[in-house]
Image: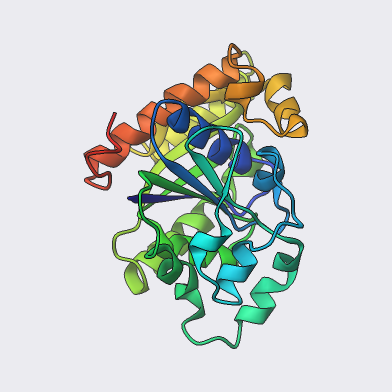
Length: 262
């Protein structure tokens, strides 16, 4: 089982769209996928038709130390399961502060999972304790970056955080890919941002670009991933390409077990 966090402390860069879409693509292709929503905003939960009022939730797992398998719910996408976020997650970071080994809560819980090829963790837009829990529990990180210069500013801080987690808490952790999202190839600025990323992160920048489309923005309001809501759209095709690229990257880093490799 491979665990991948989708993380960036900047909001609005399509973290949730990436986690949900990649999970849906791979589930539709026969993989068993679990999406864990640790963002208090619960956008991934909503995007898959779930509810913040659902219990048990990831709050039950992280704060109350409930069994993780009891928090798993099925989604409308066959083979794609969800551990929903909850309203109580808004205070989870504060509640975890005095807890012993608080950074290890999620990793410890995940060890009880069985039968999944891939676990995706949708992180909040911060580098707080919830994101640290996700990084400590993960084998790899996908970093969605919007095709704008402001989105580049926090990338150095995020890579420093990942380096710190790797050196102190999780030596297995690697960045699997930096993914350009909301990309408009006709826009000179978007091309400049892509060139800048390629210059600084030549091995990490994904070959796939996720286009800016209305369909992708509409999908969550219907409680469906883009691959279900608009399977013929350019965004659905791009996320399918990225899902395959991600598996190849994980395999090349020896992070993916044989059953995950496509």
